Amino acid sequence: MSVSPSRRRLLQAALLSPVAACTSHAPQTPAALDPDVALRQAAIARERQLLELYSSAVESSPALAATLGAIRAEHEEHLAALAPPATSASPVAPRVLPAVHPVALVAAERSAASAHAAAALLASRPLAALLASLAASEASHPVALP
Image (cartoon, rainbow, N blue to C red; front, side, top):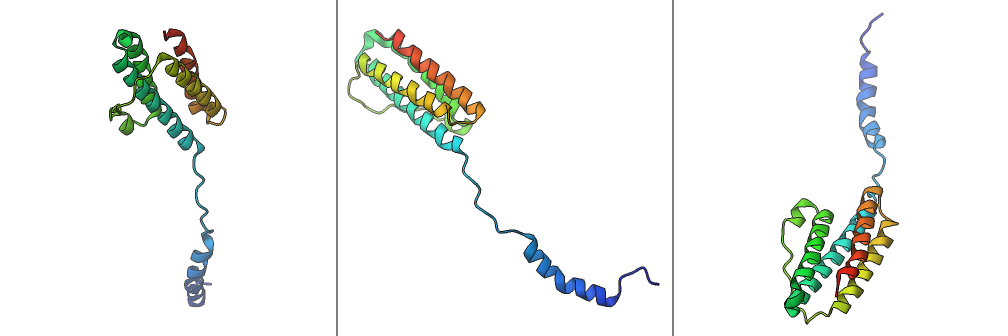
């Protein structure tokens, strides 16, 4: 008895191998999008908006520059924590905005805090922790505002 396969077995294997190759791969379903991507992008947009508001407020209220500048610096840190390294390296150029009153800053901080907290409920654990921390920070900022 021969240990090697017969010629007939080799031919059968050769004929069936393309069929096996075609059937072994199931149709690929599109990969589900990571929900954290959209939540992170929205949080980045909120932080950028706050940075713009604070830049405008510092320009329109030089007497408050020290207080507002310190809070703006915190928002820069928030943006750096949220953004991937390539994105956080580029500075945020403030747009020319009309004068911003501290009352508008309070409203913007409260809105951002609420949005960060709501997003934290939908995010993965690591992002949820970051968003909850940002929400707490934003909620504390109105206390420091005049």
